[in-house]
Structures are given as structure tokens and as C-alpha cells.
Length: 133
Image 1 (cartoon, rainbow, N blue to C red):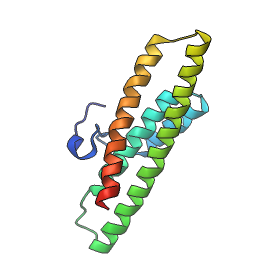
Image 2 (image 1 turned 45 degrees about the vertical axis):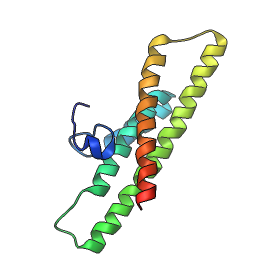
Image 3 (image 1 turned 60 degrees about the horizontal axis):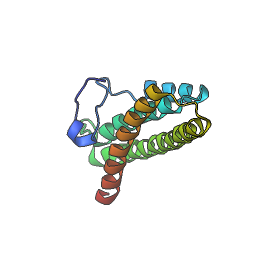
């Protein structure tokens, strides 16, 4: 992702098309393949988009509708943050098992570290949102 849409607001890069569903679908596909690092990354992207959408101001809705829609996006963002966390734990568990068996993949470990750092950045944002609500 090379877009910088609201990077300061969400703490991450957000897809320019602002559609979380391709990321959710790819996350589900990666889980089926047991590629938990990629699944965590996909769910992380979905989370970022949903957070952005929850904060987006739409002029065509009244205040009550905007608040309700924003809450729905926030709930879904929380769901995909949780799924990303679960995948992260599974990926780290897999790394630990690989380390213990002596079958370590250095490239996979580096990719996993980058995914983990993006998720940690979002954890901070998620905690901030809870306190603001």
C-alpha cells in the first residue's frame, strides 16, 4: 500500500479505495492456508480502513445516522483487530515452534516482524479510541 490517506489519523497506511472487503477475504484465504502473518496483515489493513470509515464525515446523513454508522464501523474494526491479533499469536506460535525445531526461516521472520510492528501501532490507536469514546 502506498497511499498516505489519513496516516496520522489511523496510524497506518489506508488503501485508496477504502474497501475493507478484499482485505477481509484475503485474510480469510490466508487463514485457510495457515499463512498467519499474511492473514494478520490483511486483517490489519481491513481494521485501518474501517477506522477511517468510522471517522469519515458524510453530509448526506443526519447526525443520528452518522453516529450509528460510525459505531457499526468501529465494531467491525474491533472484530478485525481481534482477528489480526489471533493470527499474530498463531504466527508467533508457529515461529516459536520453528525455532525450537531448528527449522527457522529468516525471510519469514523479518516479514513477520514488520506485520507485528504494524499491528502494535494499531493497538495503540485502538486503545486511544476506547478512551475517547
